[in-house]
Length: 393
Ligand SMILES: *Cc1c(COP(=O)(O)O)cnc(C)c1O
Image (cartoon, rainbow, N blue to C red; front, top):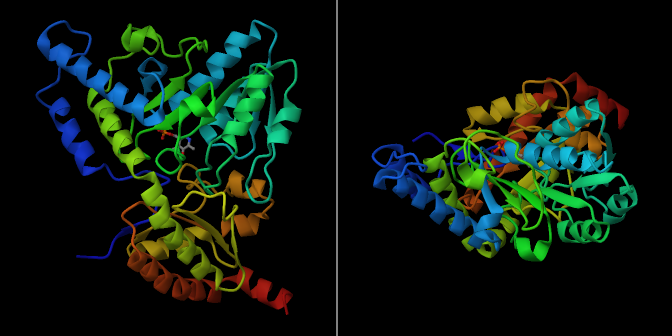
């Protein structure tokens, strides 16, 4: 078989075998509408409630606090928009987020600015970390909501979410976290964490695309976002994605079981990849090495274009990413890398490898055997590299 190494798990993941098996009946024979009263319908309803219980247990939440959505993007939109609209009526028209959020958060905030809200985009350190004090200092009497991601999707840096939640609680400001990338990589105990709202996505944890959840802590008011029928206790309308929800339940149950083992296995492999790539001249690691997801590698390899590198890696059977999947296809460098203070050229020369639990040390050796020759080839053809070498003489 031809070599294929999937190193883009931050973009999406492969559906797990058990997840797939669990979903199959609901794609075919068990097709009942969960709102119908006959057995075929009730069976679908039951399957959803089992998935909700599994999800609640995996996150240490109450099943009533879990609402199924179409994914991370919808959950982010819902959390921020509905909170903003609700609190505008109390004169609170200020939102706080960070400069390096996912576009699901950033573009929502930009839209709200057009609607009259003011938004503070808190900067991050050159290591890609958010300071709790910076968040605290940004809070005013008008602040409605603070939204800070748990782990960054490009550089994998992990933020002090529990501390930020405590500050928001003290200041009586709603706190939302986009925890899409953290799920399955960092233990998440929602009761202990103290967040009000949190977003999660299925397809980043070996469930299918098009399903996710929003966590709404008991007592937190969140007006409805999608209007229609009475599904999800009348909080989120639309006939449920039964198969997707069943898949989500199995996937989250599985992924939270092995987090310590995953961290123990992947951290040295990740470090081997990082250290291996950094032996090449004019390379740098993007984002903190310690406060980092166990499967994330993000490096800049100066003198090359990220896109060319990706195409050549693809020819060697390696699927990777540069910047984020959502921005590839555009020529703008990643807003996340720019937020670390990287100049455009260096941001353009980035490579993200996001590995999953089945990635082995031998796989890392293969990647490291391929990258240097590709880099050499690309640098030979690159006017950027020529300039860089002559400047550093
Ligand atoms: C993937 C991702 C999203 C979007 O989730 P979808 O389910 O694809 O809508 C949001 N935030 C982060 C951090 C992500 O990585």
